[in-house]
Image (cartoon, rainbow, N blue to C red; front, side):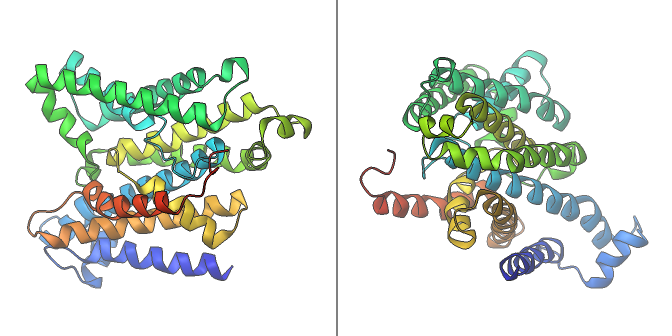
Length: 328
């Protein structure tokens, strides 16, 4: 309980900084008026209502989604270095958007939201099948290698498309690094529902995922079906990652650094890890976004770059601390 209250306080501070801090500082009266007595002639209220509040909601969705997706992914692959980009889910969503922009010529928020989910889902299913799940031989190493291979293939295809079609480059810029700057153009309500649905599936499947972590043979002995459990986990990952990517793009490393922190704080109980991951992921993403906005005013450093600056050293440290047999 103390842990959850502490994380809620950190999240509240991060949310307050997102709303109050920026190139133009806002006061409590500005925020209150923007929410309760909006005046379109007041520039401060317009910024809060149309920019900062959507940015806050997008940050909560993307941070919580990537944090929980990374936790589920590391549980299902038994790989402490797994994140939503590892199984090609981010690349699948980005590839679908780029192909959609190439075919239709549009790249607005609505199209992105529509295309991220089938793209992410097809990538997740492809990894699941390539990893041997169809024959019941999927293991953490096979799933990881299949994900890395598919991720490289999809990114190569994306590069080939944007190199030959410069008009698609504008559509892909948002996907090169994650950003919350276009939050007011995203279907935040729909993505919130998708996030809750994916999180609910993961929460319900948590006991079976914990059994699967003991090994496929032992999981079967406990009455679990490894293939079905893996498919359920991939469905949850697709919904949570799709929601995050639709509102913020492919934010790097967040799904990698949040799960180990959650395990340290919550212990090895997956349901508790999921709750901690949601709060911790949202707080870290909002703080990174605020830091990016304050570093180069009136411009900003995209939040995907900020999380990469934090996540890359953390990734190197994690690799150095891995013990032999960590993937066994």
